[in-house]
Image (tube, rainbow, N blue to C red; front, side, top):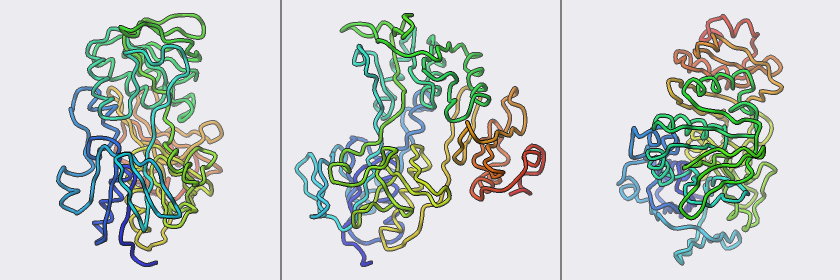
Length: 407
């Protein structure tokens, strides 16, 4: 593979910015274009539902210092959206009239929040949370709110509920699922988060759907449930997940996988010559799992963005990292590593769920599929090794043996 003269990265979130930076760190001397639709320079998303929303910070964690891109001869174009990719001509067109030829192309277009197909979903006072501007607007709304309804009991919904309570608003969380985070953690571990929020004054309406968001031109006033009950609300957060931004890839003729992402191989390559996809949009054939995995968390964007730089320059290395994410809610902090199915995998708990100091393991056929440490910070390295190796262990070993020794 000859060295490319120009590499274009479409998408200036964590994945795209990590790819551009890693190219320079590897000594690539050619032209690098980093095109981003947002007006801000690249930043990391986790603080938006944590420190920024809580009011502990006014800025996110920037991927790089403000002068980094110019100092490293990375042409960064904020506020510019790619509108078309012509694979045959190796050309990217944008909404500013630009035409950018490439030798290698990285698509890192990220995700967008899903919306609700119900009346009133576009009323003033109805928010989603994905960008820095979203987070600052929602924080300001929380400051003035009396009644907040969060629609969605996933990670963003539960973190936002904790933030809203810190602003002294009354908070109700609504979701069709019967336990917050139940689809990821299973009923037993999800109960830890449900009880935590209940102790902090959050009200739950689980197992219920949304019929309508009520209000008028002056703003939202309530949320009507499918049961007919109406919850008062002057702020509503819709946190029902995100959809990968694959419109550009689909229009170009790239394969879209069953999980909605752009199909890539173990090395993050699409079937089109010299075109790669990373981050939220990448439906990655993961060698450790033997099937496609699409991950929407921070570590995956950073890891894939950094990794793809080597493959752009001629390496042929598979991306092998296990999924990782973390959350902070009230006085609970946790890290999750791996990929579990809480319905079929065996749950093993080391420690005490009631005290919220424990490690949860999920075993599949006697191997560690995933591990989550909650308010327990001494064994992170061991957990990483156990999950990466898919270690063969017994439940009794996980409950009582030295984890470093097992690793």
